[in-house]
Length: 368
Ligand code: SF4
Image (cartoon, rainbow, N blue to C red; front, side, top):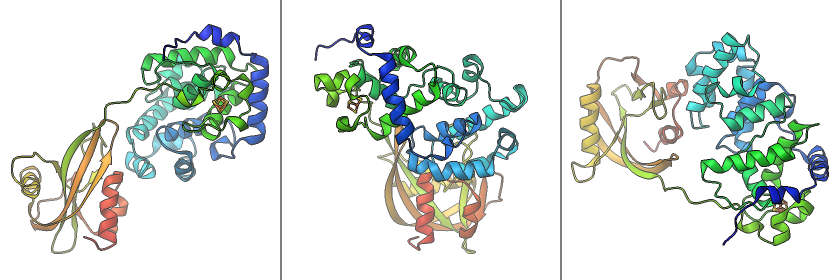
């Protein structure tokens, strides 16, 4: 389709006052009662926004409640051991979010006397706080007219303003930030940004938007043109690269299992896992490669017995294709900070990534 956007022309068609009135009165009556909306505490809003990245609201609610109960203030989170923070995050994925949040909160305590900064420059310098999160905290907590543009807001505004730029391109965000700056309510920037997020979640959804129920339908240029289903334009990402992995659930005579702590940097840093190894095709069988790896790397002699199950775990750039094997530890090695032999009941005390939690489930239900 040969459509080029002209943001200024599109903006001229919007009556800002009426648009805000329609959007905000809808938000006031229809907003969901979410735990992070109980007050405007910037720390709570920050935690919620970090948790909500790549994760659905329903999933986040119980995590948010437990997290705030465990770490009610920036001081509690700053002082907590990292293991405890990761345990509270277990299952949410993208663990670097939790680690960055804690580092940034420490900076807030040390540099800003425990007060989450309220200027764009200071807040954007905190670890893990990108433009979206900065805008969300500044607007929702501090009522500053700053844009908070994520994929949802880009979808909503691409339709309202009929913007045909590819939202998968990082540079496109600027166009939407400019649009928000032009339209944001000066009286209530907090509700304006939250209303856009709510509209994207409840009405202007990715597939089949509910235009007939939409509070801003009379302002929506895509609806007027009948092209709401064609927007936003979003080019496809490269599919994640498959990585074959063999994982061993290896038991000692005492019925303990061997677990290992991942390195302190990189993917899933500092989380615990069952020993695993990226396997190469064309060489030895996967189980033999795994056995050799465990002996070489950990000094533990094992005997792999059975292939139990295959499953996949998708990250943004790679896809683990996990082949799970069971077997025995023939000769133990000394325990270290990174290598432990633990009873199945004790596994609860360690933080595992989601894919390895599935393996724990197999152990608990007796499959292994
Ligand atoms: S009218 Fe439809 S496409 Fe336009 S903002 Fe509302 S729900 Fe989205």
